[in-house]
Image 1 (cartoon, helix red, strand yellow):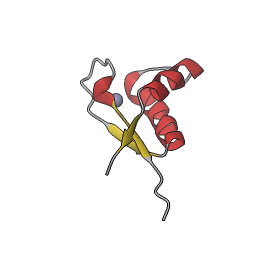
Image 2 (spheres, helix red, strand yellow):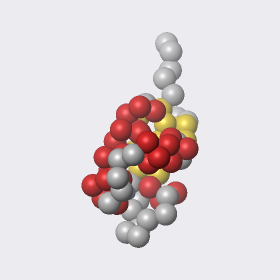
Image 3 (cartoon, helix red, strand yellow):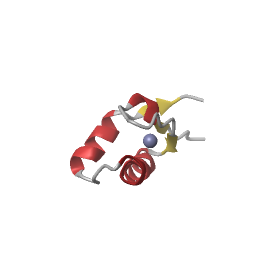
Image 4 (cartoon, protein in one colour):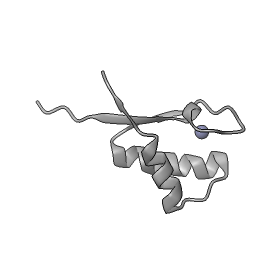
Length: 64
Ligand SMILES: [Zn+2]
């Protein structure tokens, strides 16, 4: 059985003013999409290619 690697971003690893502790995990595409929405709704960011690039650079692989 092929195991798909899940990735996650941890909001605590990004600078934020509201001490957000959200962790989002899933496939790379899912995490970036969800994290971009979260960054817009909760952190007041604009959904830009730069934002997604920053999120992608913060992705970590999740090991079971
Ligand atoms: Zn957050």
